[in-house]
Image (cartoon, rainbow, N blue to C red; front, side, top):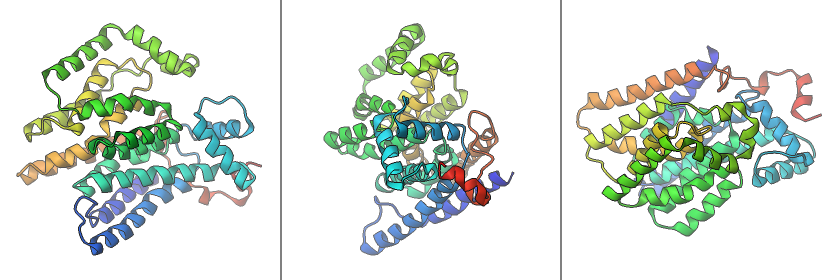
Length: 360
C-alpha cells in the first residue's frame, strides 16, 4: 500500500510542477523560457530520482543484472551492441559491476527524452504530461529499460517527421535501434502515418489488418526470423493474446477525435494504425512493444481533442477516465508480469548488502 501512495504522490507533485510550465510551443519571452527550464529541471529530478533509487523493482530487474554481467565479460547476450558497449564502458570506467549506475543512467536518458519531446511538441504540456503519468508509461520504464529508452528517443524523433527532416529522423531511429532493434519498425511507419490519408490508404490499412487475421502463421515466421530468441521463450510463442484494454483505449481516442473534428494528421493516423494492430495482430509476441510505438501519439492527440470540447464536465470525465485507468494500472502493478510494486529502494538496505551493489 505504501508503494501505491508513493506512486500517487509522484503523479500529484510532478503534475503540480508541470502545470506551471508553458511548453516550448507557447513560451515566447526569455523570462518564460528561463522559468520553464528551472521547472523542467525540477520535474526531471522528481521522475529520475525514484527510478534511480529503486532496486529489484520490476519483473526483469534481476534479468538485466545478468545481462549487464554477460555483456561485460563477453558472454552471449540477446541485447543489442549499443547497449552492450555502454554497459562495458561504464563498468570499465567504474572498475566494477556497479549495476545501480547502469539503471540510473538509462533512467536519466529516458526521462530526459520524454520530457523534451513533450516540451517541444505539445501545445498542452501539463495535460500531455499528466497522461504520461496516468497511462502508467513513466512507471513502465522501470521494466525493459533499454526498450523504453529507445521509445523515448523515438517519441522525441516525431518532431523530425512533422518537420520533414527525414535525415535527422533516420539518425535518431538508428541510434535508438542500437539499444532495441524494434525501433527500426518506425522507419516506414512514422513517414506513412505523416501522409495525408485518403480512401486508398485506409483500404491498404484494412487489407493489412485482414492479412493479419488470415495469415498469422506466415507473419509469425517473419517475427521468429527477426527475433530468434523467441524460439526459447514459450510465453512469446504462445502469443500475446487480445489486449482488450488497448483496443478500448485506441477506439475511445478515435471516437473522441472524430467527435471533435480531428480526422487526419500524424498522431490521428498513428492511433488508427495502433487500433488495427491490436485487433488484427494479437498473435504477435509482446505486441505492446510495437503498439506503444504508435499509441504514444495519444499523449499529444488527447489534449488537442479535449481543448476543442466546450463542456467542462466532458473534459473532466475524460481525465477522470484516465485516472481510473491509472488506478487499474496500480492494481495490476503487483502482478508477476509487471512487478513495479512493491517499490524497493537501496536506501533501506543495510550496509552489508552494498557488496551486491558493487558486484563483489
